[in-house]
Image (tube, one colour):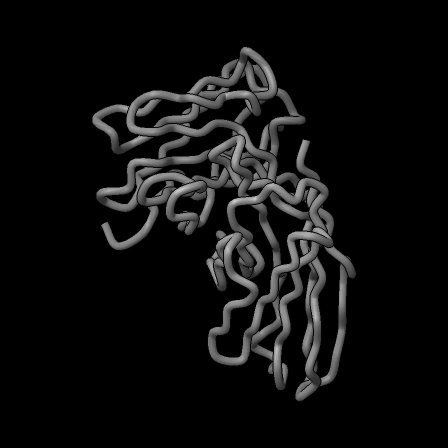
Length: 116
Length: 112
């Protein structure tokens, strides 16, 4: 597609429920990133994919968080048993090769998650 | 561990002013430095990318400089306009990792 697409744009859920957030990167981009932005905070790195593998998932806050990428394209971030502190905007970005190669990241509009 | 700091956290200026946004990073072994713009409720838009071998990049009224030895980058905005109002974030890409480390941003308001 023309840009990075994320869905849903907004998600309100009850505490304890599971949620799935989807990211469709720019066609041909092999690198895909998930970041989290909490209210008034900077961007917090969650996980990085190169193709379908995740060489760096050091930013995932707990084992309730997981992500996968299939076909070197679409990625899904899953949060199990959501907690109120999970409320944030989850941003996805893609890059042609990786931050240390081409460097330029293209971001989606984000998925705003609210846990009641 | 790379840490990125941006000063000031917020800035309010009248239209037409030239202004400078500052970004500092602790690990000078960066591969590149990127500046982004974020409008309220939106994702990030890439403004300028400076590779470690470069000193500056320019795009229209924007100019970004990089001084690795001092761990600093500046974003210069000439002749500011109300449409420039947004949050500006810088991010450093390190040799040791393929991820960008972001600063907390400078929230800019340009009033008519």
